Image 1 (tube, rainbow, N blue to C red):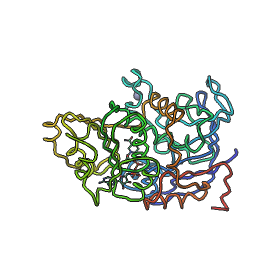
Image 2: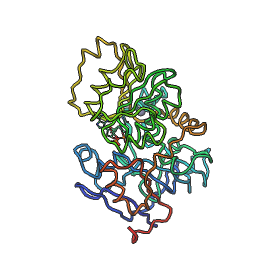
Image 3: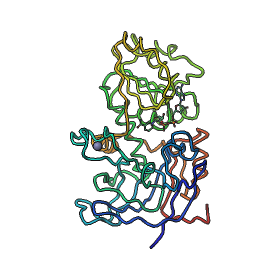
Image 4: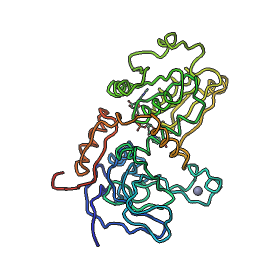
Length: 351
Ligand code: NAD
Ligand code: ZN
């Protein structure tokens, strides 16, 4: 059987390995994808580091990775509507199809979701098998690199489009890749002011370079100092929490107008405390966000990219796949946007 190169969590400890594995064979309802580009996500870094969540969740031997773009090279007998040669990305959450939410078309809320690169083989490999239900075709005017970022762009899109944005003042905490993309979407969608906070100057500078007009380093400056410049009377209308920091979430709660709406994508510590009285007395709405809507989010992000949304500047580093180790180190020191791994010509001796 022919082999492929893949990035594997080999042992139950920190680190990852570049290994040769059998190329998977697509089942009847699956396509086989030749991976072209992948992007590294914070989740992959958690798996690399072997934090508590990873140790509880990942079976050693797992091929990791879930942000990808590739080309269909084979299809199972029951696959219809897709053909060999098509450029695709895909939704990494494989749902059960039978629970109440799946049956109602709310597949992002399935209780039995299996994640590629987490619970089943992932995309950091030369080949990936996926059910045809999860494949998303990439139009010609969207590059491989940008398509490899559809998974996090989908998180940003799903979160940002959770609430009405036209004319609203939006606070986004956390200028990681997802926060920056969400800020671009809110500006694109017609918000009045979009304010993006972080404590990392590299990230805020990257956001400014990409056209985000209001960026604040909250380790040095206070949000309230900007109130009058922003012409804010009563606070922010919409908040998108994208840092996972409880401090940021508390700051957001304090900065919202009464009746404000908050979407929470960042994953805070399970025991993080907030002032619930403010949530009640100020009539705040808080919505938890997981993943992307299948497939309305995919549709919207594709069409926004085709009509002027530009996220390409977020890609700050490009590496051959075999040099993944450098990519993970860059991610860890916070001096990067999205990092792309190229799988077109894998030659491990160069790694
Ligand atoms: P990231 O770690 O690259 O970015 C988070 C940013 O928050 C960093 O730049 C960090 O400096 C900043 N930050 C830390 N403390 C802050 C504070 N007090 N105020 C403002 N900013 C602060 O992460 P990312 O890849 O952009 O993802 C964003 C968040 O969303 C993470 O928490 C991630 O775990 C989470 N996430 C959730 C889902 C989901 O489905 N719910 C999916 C993907 C990512
Ligand atoms: Zn389900």
